[in-house]
Image 1 (cartoon, rainbow, N blue to C red):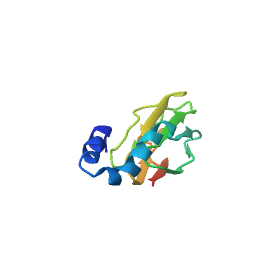
Image 2 (image 1 turned 120 degrees about the vertical axis):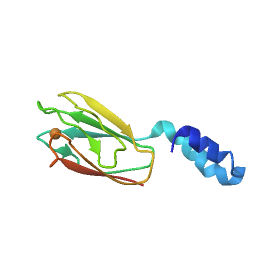
Image 3 (image 1 turned 90 degrees about the vertical axis):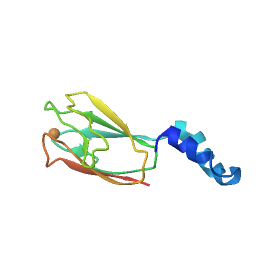
Image 4 (image 1 turned 45 degrees about the vertical axis):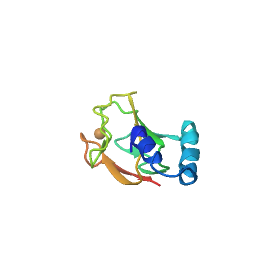
Length: 113
Ligand SMILES: [Cu+2]
């Protein structure tokens, strides 16, 4: 859900119901940025558990290019060369499988709660 959409939803609920959501919004500056190292044709870690709104930051340490691509199409880093990073904010809860389009045997899973 985008910030714009979230504000629109909050505008429709009574203030006392909106309060917990507003507290979470105030905490937005403290969201986790979880690093995932791509090295040796693998994602490390490749099983990732984060909270809604947290970020995952993929960095390629290999000489070969890689991608970090969600199977559902939610994100796609494009080709990452050595030293390149790609950051994605996980705004929806659920389980998201990802892989490298160049080396499809490279896989991982992000669980957002
Ligand atoms: Cu790859």
